[in-house]
Amino acid sequence: MPLSLTEALEASRTGDLWIFRGTSRADRAIRAVTNAPVNHVGMAVVLEDLPPLMWHAELGRSLPDVWTGGHHPGVQLHDLGDAVHRWRDRYHQRAWLRQLSPEVGREAEDSLLRTIARLDGVSFPSTGRLAWRWLSGRFADWRLPGGGAPTPTAAFCAEVVAVTYQEMGILPTGRPSNWYDPGSFWSGDVLELNPGWRLGEEIAVD
Image (tube, rainbow, N blue to C red; front, side, top):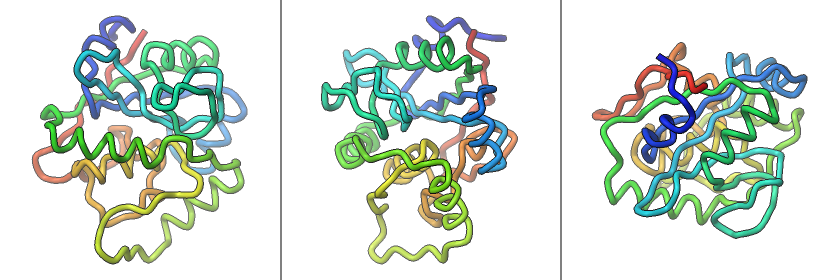
């Protein structure tokens, strides 16, 4: 049963996914490039007394980045309600919530904050470079001595979620973050999480 946006915001916890599908030319281009059924994914960040936030990457800069207090394109931390309103009302996107279980603990939260500090402000790739990054991720021989994820020079929305999940210990590190596309986080795909973690089915948000 669909949730209202107010209900979805109240239900959101750190690590939950917000997934979007639109019909614009750019939306269709992203889905064509990645062969994904959806075109955008972000991650909820819900910490202590702060309002719910969304950690994601996008081309727009109209919303203030909560981490820096400024406006910039690329990887950003936005007020979750404002971000969903923008994607739903201005970009005419359908929205879904996927809830992560169990709840994220303090160690994973600390890893999340370190990842935000490292990636916030990283640029968003052009459509052509986006395709190249995704293809190179799919066919790359992934070896990273010493573990941990590198800082990308340009981050696509699915990469941001993937590298954050990896740093939080939710997603295995065997694949590069640019192997993932938005559809990887849709329940129709098979997303292998580390033992003990699971994502629920999509809940439509009206």
